[in-house]
Length: 281
Image 1 (cartoon, rainbow, N blue to C red):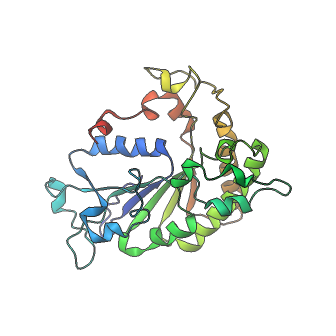
Image 2 (image 1 turned 120 degrees about the vertical axis):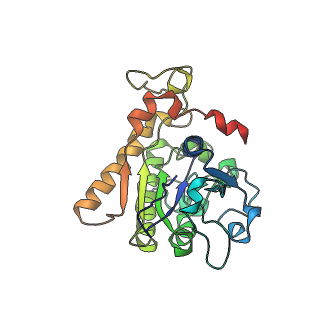
C-alpha cells in the first residue's frame, strides 16, 4: 500500500505486501480515491504480466490500481512506461505471507529443532514471495516505486508447520527472518525508496474483539486466540521495533522504518474488516 508522491518530477508509484489485512486496507484506500482509481488485471498489458506472481493462479496477487484516464487528475499525471501507453500503477498489492521461501525458513530453525517433512506443503505457502526475488523488482526504476509497506508477519505461527514447531522456536526463526529481510532490502533498494514495516494486528478472535464490534472500542481487546499464535503478535511487533531501533542507533537501515498502527487498528473495527466496496470485485 503506497501513496503516490506528487512533488514535481518525483512522482512515485507504491507497493503493499503481505497478508489479508493489508489487502483490506488497500481496498479501503481504493474506496476513498474512487472513482479516480481503477483496478486492472495482469492481462491488461504485457509488462503487468511480467510482475512477480502474475503467472500464478492466485486471485490475491498482484492487485494493480492505476489512475482512471477519465479522472480530471489524469491531465496532471502522465506517467507511463517508456515507449508505451501503459500506466505505471499508483498502488500494487501482493500477498506474501512470509517473505521467505519454505526451504529458507526451514534452514533458519534453531539448533535442535527440525521440521517433520511428512507434514508436507501447507496451503498458505502458495501465498509467498521470497524477498530476494521481489526486492529486485521493487528496485527496478521503471516501476518508479517510492514507498513500500509490509506487514510485520501475522502468519509466522506453529500452524504453518503442522503444529510441530513450538512458539519459542518460531520466535527465533522470526528474529532470523527480520535480519535477512532487512539486509536484503538494504542491499537491493534504491536510495530514494523507503520501507515501512507496519505493525500487524491480531485480526481474529474467539467470540470477542475488534472483528465482532460494531463501533470503536475504548481500549484494545486482549486477544486469546491461541491456534494461530495471534495472542503473541504484540511480541512479534516488538521484535521488529527493537531490531530497527538498535539498527538506527548504529546508523543502519535508515530507509527501513517501523510503523506502529497496532493500537488504533485494534480500536477501530473498520480497520480490520472488509470494506463494502471490495464486494464489487
